[in-house]
Amino acid sequence: MTHTFLIYGSYGYTGDLIAREAVVRGLRPILAGRDPQRLARQAAELGLQHIAFSLDDRAALDLALSQVNVALHCAGPFAATAQPMVDGCLRQRVHYLDLTGEIQVFEALARRSAEAQAVGVMLLPGAGFDVAPSDCLAAHLKRRLPTADRLALGIRGLGSGVSRGTLNTGVESLAGATWVRRQGKLMQLPAGSLTRAINFGRGMESCTAIGWGDVATAFYSTGIPTIEVYFAAPLALRWGLRSTRWLGPLLGAPPVQAALKAAVQRQPPGPNAAQRARGRSLLWGEVRDPAGQRRVSRLSTPDGYTSTVLAALAMVEKALAGQAPPGFQTPSLAYGADLVLELPGVTREDVAQ
Image 1: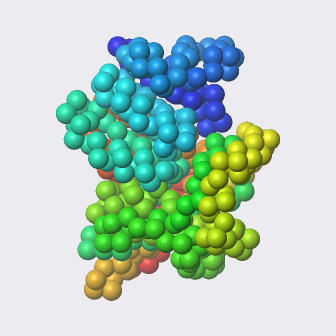
Image 2: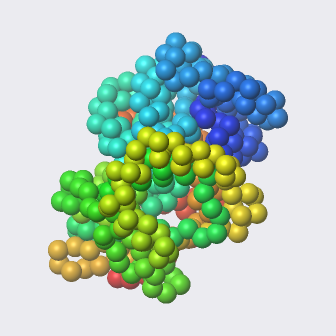
């Protein structure tokens, strides 16, 4: 086994950003995915080895994983693709990281923690913007108020846009409700029904609860039983979320899903370099305890895609260096609440006792 890693889905928008930054850092990942033509073009440009295979080809998957120590899985939607890659990593004893923000994936991998521990494999989903910075913020807040039993997080994205992959995942979730955690249990609320005002440092803004991955991961990172995650949403989006209460069945119908995904494919692959450079993401977190104590902290990070590249590669490099605690992990469980401060362009402030 060589001391390197595999990027599956490397020619996708985010996978390609990660591969290019890896080369800049002197890393030599193996590029992988289903499309041999796209892989060959990317590999020729970057001067890297590549392997084309489908995740349902067990023999090819095992052969590819047998050559690496770490797999970074970038091919979503992860609800459909994570299981076969995790299965292969457990068989080949390869550490697994991915970029998911999907609650069902986090919960599924948490249930496999003992299995991964038995073979010495780390399972670390959510190594990108969703959820690495927000998970570190949640852990920092728990550190500030160890008695906390309620956690609220808020996210505000500024100016970069979204990729086709993110849009496709969003299309698939249109028929769903909003997830929150209450007393340790996941539960659903009608979309758009839970709102609050949050100050990200620019004055109070209206925000709507969303099923961000921290509803799952922050529970494992902090033990806090009641968790809500909010997104700073313009009025049109808030009304759109509320409309899914009545339109959900229609939006989830196969013909409508197919039409929406076809429209996504007509969009640009994702924000360009200038848009990413201009973009910033602001994160806010609040914890409270039964005695009425409250703590608030905020993060400012580069745009979500830049943050994903920086966070994912930081954790890959740690795993390659032997820092890979076995079993299910979150970013802060594996590498601490201050991991996010190791990333260029990230600042954190504590704004309330």
